[in-house]
Length: 480
Ligand SMILES: [Zn+2]
Image (tube, rainbow, N blue to C red):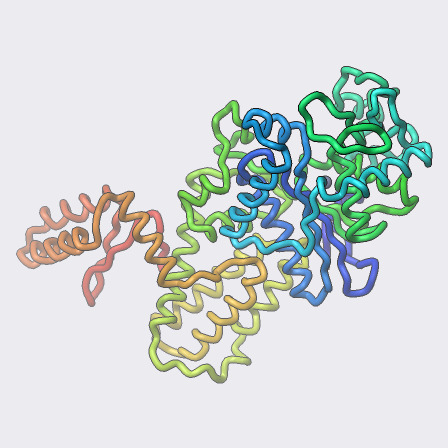
């Protein structure tokens, strides 16, 4: 299996530290607001990686944290006159609801900064003892970047560039602008803990190093996060962890690409943020998931109406095919094991996914298979194979969480959504179609075309065949 490693800048063979075992840590959400669609991509990507590694027989321990103490959380909680931890607890519950609606499966361990204060303080103290960190008079603890000569090795930044990446104004007691806070002394009105450094709270970076060490050990196999975390967050995690242990922190660094909305970076000021709840108001959970997984995890992903429409269309096609197979009567599952298409499903999936978790390729493999299924449906033959292939697709693609819905329900849900959009009912469409059939029999082709155009303007297309006229939605229709 090949994995792209940000550290080496190349695809590498995945060789775990311990045979058939993987220790994986992915940076989770800072819960200061509702989860947005970027959080969803990150959670989906590492869920898929976790599930796929298990599918390939690895025993995985997957840790995904929640940052529940942070400047933004404290500011929000203060606005609402709430205790910061009560506020973040509430946001974690909401985040978990959002992610479970997207059927993102839980990590094995979901540690929180506030529950690891003793471990964090201990980590800081050890770094001070080793000369990698210092305590200021004010009670802040900083990591001394100059004591870690390899600093910048992940982001490939040089020292001069590093200074551009950090705040220029030098905080009181900070010896070098490059140094970053491990521990922050308490300000008025902030949540704090009593520690040997005085009253204070942890900085952001230290929690991940601490929780990875505590839950997974000194060296882990895979560390993941969004591309925006490479610098400074992950660079700082490496400096902290490797200074403490003297060992490599993570063998493979995986980073997922970021999301834009209609070609623009998501931002509150542009008014183009999309929360998970917003997206779920508009789309079936699997449509959102399909869109995310139809691109490779490392590429940027633009969310726009057109991309969502394509995802809806493709899933509608897949589920309509499944629905047609479900409607076949008295099919006995037998003699399918040697069917080439049947055998290719798992083999092609593994080939795609073994190549740096290429879900985009795994999804594109489906189109050939569905074409084959539709040919068999049309010819009304090999019904046992149809059913066996459908079951196999559901089994294999459960790893990436796609095609797991009830086909009839899914098709109906999209139909109802598009009827609402067209402002039509099924009865109205069928009435117009029978009217058209009548005028055609009277050879009034002008009127017949008028009806067709009227429906077309509302997004409904008609297909005439020997057995009558079928209709479908223009936006969803794929020739089967
Ligand atoms: Zn982190």
